[in-house]
Length: 347
Image: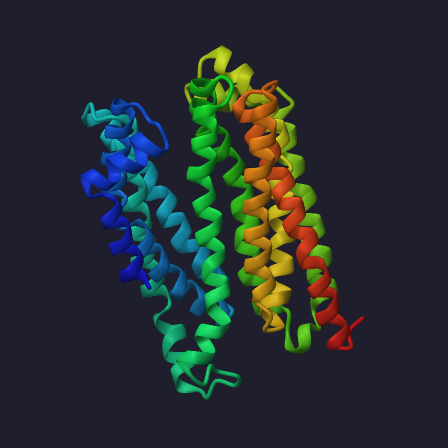
């Protein structure tokens, strides 16, 4: 899988195909497209390295060694910061290229650290007979393929949103601020994303731990979105947008409304992770991919409608579309989750 994904990304970097996608389809200006190309080039190891890293993170979580996952992640963050600082001080390379190099170095270090830290867990798992192991590649494929579509659809929607931003009201401002807003939002969403693996590991046989994990998910969701709302609605927003991210005061003011709207996404991310964990624990992965596909469709429809209406800036339209799409996906997964819980005689 990691090889196929890396080859696929390399194919997209073939100049004629890249130019067709970035300049003809998305509509980026040539000077912006050239910076995107260099950044993607240094990010070529990113998908494969992350896939390999997450495999061994799963081994650690399966062996209840989640602290080691955190240790490797700290190594990643420190490496990214040090590489970015070194490049910033010693060279005049473009910011986007600098960020790509820092990100690639960070995930490579995290992958190596995770593999080393998982050595004991690998030996422990191999030494004992695992109950409920996958019996065939066909069984693994039936379980995994719907899940494989989920990140593909999720990540694939971002270029689509970028396309709409370039065609909507105030396109340059929207394209400038959305990566900054997305980065801040992701700091809080990342906690929710990691909750899925932990919930799967701790649900227990027959999903018996669903109530306790559900209560924890609710508290975590309120805490994450509450903290981000606190930033988005106070002078702390200017600290991030102007001082840290380097936006001008006008762009920072333009960012406020979409940031406040997207402050709800971390809570939704936690609830999505919780529902997905229950579905995966119940061996029902298909509703996860269908919910994600439905979310992508709703995002496109909402963006189309709002941009055709023409009264809102592209960044605000994108924030609203993300929120509505995620709500629809959550609602879509609730019914099969309830059916699973009833079938398990837990309710």
